[in-house]
Image 1: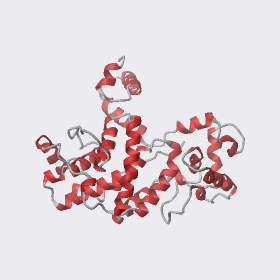
Image 2: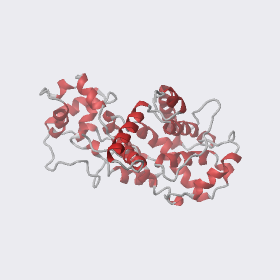
Image 3: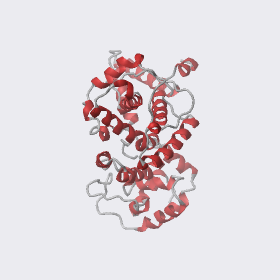
Image 4: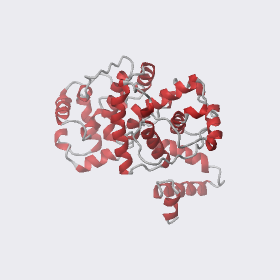
Length: 342
């Protein structure tokens, strides 16, 4: 089983650019914005398209990300409202939304993960002209919002897809190398370099099941399965000394050790080339958990309900009931709860 992937949580990557907000339980800047929400003219906001002229380095990634966000929002695959909200806010900031926009009131942030802070950052950037924020705060917010909306949102949204992990991690490293804000790019590279499980010799094999990887590259990956493995088996690629350029390829990480993933996931002894069409194997790969969300939800669950009852047997029964309810009602919406048989 792959190690938990932290690719869905860029909080560490944003710490440096969010220093003005003192990454604490109470963020005064966010709190003031929350208190002023009702007085804002929510029909008057400023997007990246309103900047004249828009920097050349931003235009091409803006167009690509607008297309991506419009596609994923159209398929309606987001299980949670906050996920959907962040995607829509990023699309609006990039100038890709059409029609009337309905903003949700700012919610809790003091115990939330990075996503609530990202949502706050986008909203405050949209309404910055009405907030009279200090220049340093505006610059910090803009750094965060540009990083999230132009670069990170795609990789965050696809972090749950196991077979996408190697290609996405490599492309994110390459994009960070070319990112126009060198300070943010360097900080993101340092952080991501501590989480490169999917560019290791073992887990790079997940890319064999990624339909986005070209056939020619998969052929080179298969050819490299005869390369000698490194002497030291690494749980993840060590970021120290790592040099990724635009010419770095997935096949360059493949060695004979990469065959081990096939051995772990299937009893068939065929050559990996013959296993790539195995639907059962594909389904096993797609069922892998490659993010740490499951562990985080389990910890949250036990914290919320551990003290609800004193009897240990009843406590375990309660946790099973709550877990089952969460699986039956994956969308935390009033409509989904009303339609549930619970």
